Image (spheres, rainbow, N blue to C red):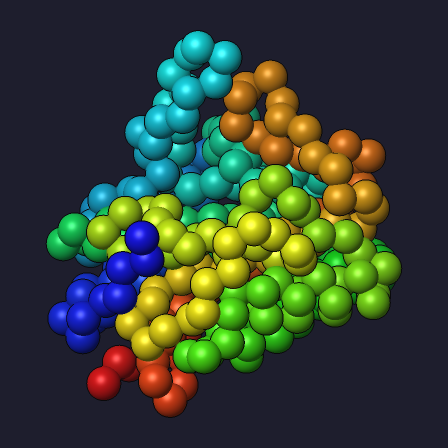
Length: 262
């Protein structure tokens, strides 16, 4: 069931989203060669706690092959060919020319916010910059199509069409999602078509839209840690995500700094 949020609920989601947006801006200033992903994780966790929230990812559980896996970080830090869910590590250091996707989730007053951004580490080669530009544009186009009366497939078609037009591929196994009292709610928001459920978007829906775009093939695999998703062919991947609220006459990006709701 898709839950339509009240104005009060949207304001609470926005508050969590604004914390997320501030964290990403703070971490962007810290990203440089020689910085560890564990250091970035510590900065994010401290910021979340100082602002009255709790990390949404730390302690998140999944079941895999009969075992329960618990995510240890406050952020996901995914480097180069890592698509999503990279585990922060104080012994893993960024290098010139890397890219790093940082995914942040915050829970405050019972409601969640979620956003991700892929940052270059110093100068990156032109093909990698193209990947970043294409993925960021995919997110922009997705948000433009996330409006009342459209369907989820309008979002997906916009992402897939632009990515494939620019010789990139769209990850299938991981998708965007509704968000609110839970980190992951209905509807699922794929970045490709076709798929089974294709609901009409309505005012009051809050969704996290997150294109995951690869330079090579769309295929991915999970590393032995049970979390880190990498491209099957070793080519690099980018990930951009915003939480948005759909209103009757517009759509607001809640994880954009100072995007007021009213």
